[in-house]
Image (cartoon, rainbow, N blue to C red; front, side, top):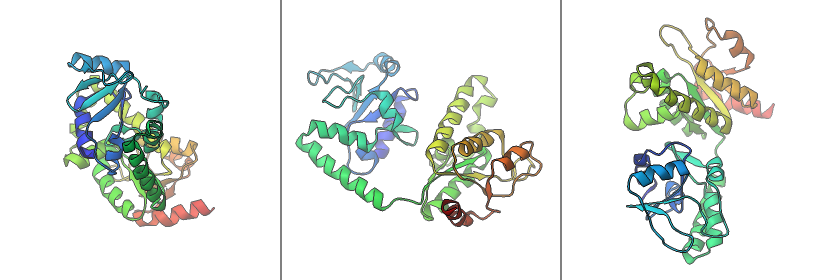
Length: 293
């Protein structure tokens, strides 16, 4: 299976966020190193109860390998297969999240394969080492986390493509990635909490997820266009993301002018952002100025 096939199959399980991670050789498939024959998951007790109710059966493969199995899936409650015994919490803390699906990092995969040291593991270690060496050579100028109102997510997708051509890795909000994948940019299809207050947990998860991306990135870019007649709109959600970036010492760039009529004008100015005056292509030069200061 390819990485994209694994992502779709894991997404179909609909397991709660934070209750599982994709492990085994699947992270190699996600990195396009090689394909994987099955899908190994390390799951929490919560996720285990869900899959047991859905008919997954425990299978003894070896003394320490007794996963719950269904089709191509193997779900493990621990990774007690060798001297390397990572916890779910540890693997999630270093996870590589792709389209919302958490994969164990290649460095963790390498640790496991080194302790196993089967012929196939030794081959995989060589492939991982070559991939990581090439990744260092191709290191980007940094990771930009784009922050904006959901109304501007179509522009976020366009900006992502443009900035990647300039040599940056670009992270856009999870819903923007979903819009890009489906081609559906209708805002009301995603803000379901407005019509159903029981869905506010989705808003909470999205906020928390993107704050995590802000903390992991090197800088943020705020996209501020006109919204409901308000020019250069920056809302409360984006202001929180800007505040986090400011607190963590990360550069803040704003694409268009600072919104003079904003209720948050004093706070926005106080965060000391760099205004690009509508030109996305000014960002690399302005970023370089900051790094050399």
